[in-house]
Image 1: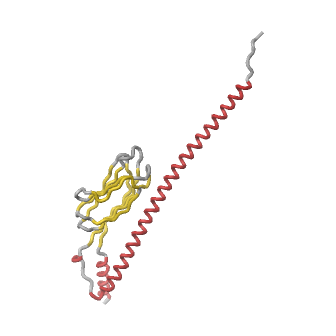
Image 2: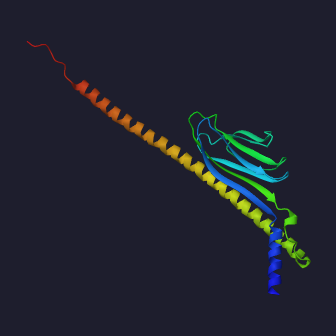
Image 3: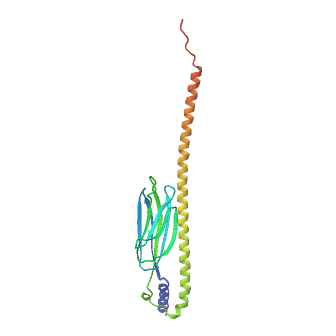
Length: 214
């Protein structure tokens, strides 16, 4: 009896998890004038593809990007964007290209965090059908798993948002610190220069001119 119940429970879990997600999360440092592309495959038409990116440091925190389908037709495109979060359905099966371009920068390196994920649905025929007495439990478990997945996705996006904001604030602090340092150095040099100039003026003013000898 216990073995039958356990088998039914396993069947419910397998029936509920009918979607497999392939995800790639990377941090990439782009050189000036560089263009870099990354690829993800949609196995069937209609699969959900998610694309997230955020510029963590460098320049004005902006980047050019474009997404093209297997036929090289544009799906998404943007210029000088700081971050983006998109979800779209694959109109064609095949390899999609996700590209970043830093060609507008002459000297600035840029660090980009990005995430590419593709949801692949499992063929229902490959799953062992659950017993009829578990159908009601299936719907409840599917709903719970869906809510759990949505919550985890939301937490993940919030973590990435806070990480991006933290990195940008840290970069701003470093930039401000550098400016304060060089301003202090310039002020110190100015004080030394004024002190030397004042000493020179005073010594020149009180120096008695040499008169003619008799």
